Length: 134
Image (cartoon, rainbow, N blue to C red; front, side, top):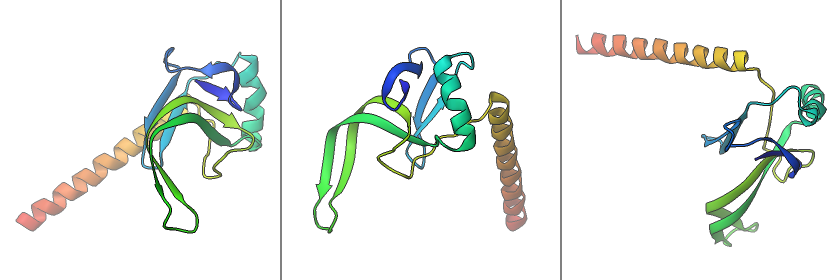
């Protein structure tokens, strides 16, 4: 579920396919389809646009974890976890999180742009290989 500060009714859910969770090179990634008429969504949109709400958190239970106590600050590595929710929050546990607004049209344009860049790179690499192999 996607919540506000880990509380309340869900703004989106994986079960209804309005929330998509995946892992990328930074970690947990989420995408949502929010209902613009939902009063809870309306309460956060302006704050997100101003930058007042721009952090995320997730509630989980570590099922498999390892600790490295050889450093001054112990390092916890979570190998397997159960995820309960992802939330937009006022105070995140980790400052490295972020959330932002993007319309479906903007997202599609970004995907098309990245796909076009990838095609150009592939064509350039192919042309270079052909030149090298004579």
